[in-house]
Length: 262
Ligand SMILES: Cc1cc2nc3c(=O)[nH]c(=O)nc-3n(C[C@H](O)[C@H](O)[C@H](O)COP(=O)(O)O)c2cc1C
Image (cartoon, rainbow, N blue to C red; front, top):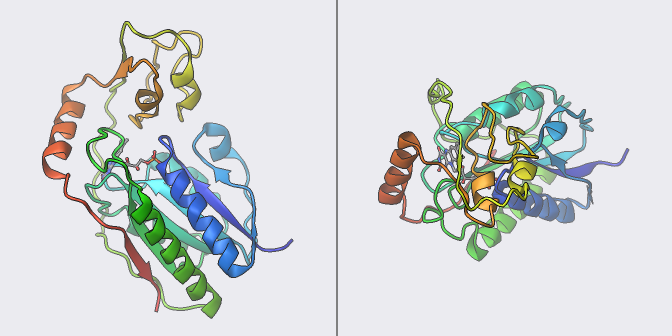
């Protein structure tokens, strides 16, 4: 089968999808490869499906940084990929605070799966928790930087194998807090339309009674952002504290960062 480029992403609020698709499109164009179908890992069906990576394929893999790490529900689908020397361009998408160890974690995961990684990047998007942080990102400037990065990544890939790409981050990776059972509350304005249930990546919202949310929420904020009535909110001291910290300390614009192998 002819080598293809795939956009691969987990993207509850859509920014990682935008970034993966743009990168895949520019990579395909510049490498004269087919831009094949997306591998969308946002919903459980996508995360359990089987994906065959061809040795000449190129994946543009974008993911949201969660607590400075790769979202842990992606470890299983990542561990099922066999790279066989195919290329992957990992793209950490973060909400203008920092990506900490997430890009390093992704790069190391792909190396253990026998992928070639000659380029990687960290791009900024609106923070899932507050539209005041990373507001309007990725914007036109970000998308131009992404296209430029993807063009350079294509050139680097066409040049052939090289050293390992070096990206910032520490080992051991940033420790994750134990999972807390924090779920969004539903306000009186809820009309029961079910849009929230349709976008939940872990399917914990009851489709017939959307005010009922089962344990297992990952606080991705997809339901909060999509609700046309603004009837879903995180009214929790821990979340409020994080939002306060973000809105106080993380307003200064951060720029995309890109990394290439020698
Ligand atoms: C649970 C959670 C943890 C997050 N942790 C971070 C973080 O450590 N640093 C950061 O800058 N942004 C963080 N964010 C913001 C997301 O990385 C950012 O909004 C991302 O663009 C969302 O991607 P998506 O639109 O594809 O869902 C976090 C968001 C969530 C929901």
